[in-house]
Image 1 (spheres, one colour):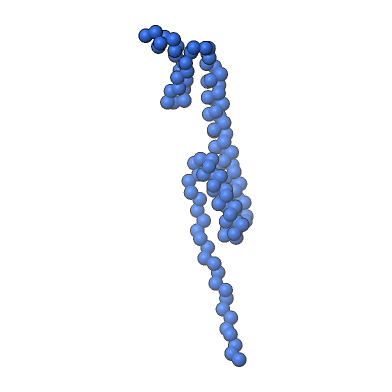
Image 2 (cartoon, helix red, strand yellow; image 1 turned 90 degrees about the vertical axis):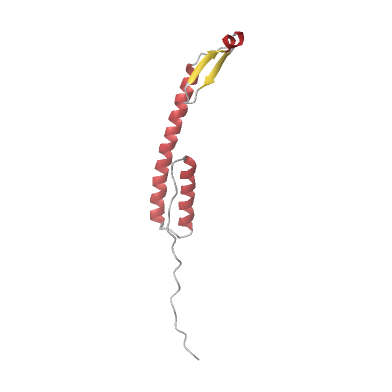
Length: 108
């Protein structure tokens, strides 16, 4: 009977962990999912993953605050308009608002 020499099991190659762009809420949400998947698969250290999730959550909250502030400004602008029957609202390309009298255009 021959004695087998035991070789250590090959360690799985660790892939380099990278996050893509993080400029939108969708991108941050995808990055959070990626971090959680890598933690579940033991591809990154849970402590490192938790720190990444914490940082991504802070960034997500900051972006959500910016979106809410823009929506609040737009809502304030709409509420300040004189919305009367027969008066058209024109949207400008800069998210500003301008109103024009639709009856004036019909008669000219």
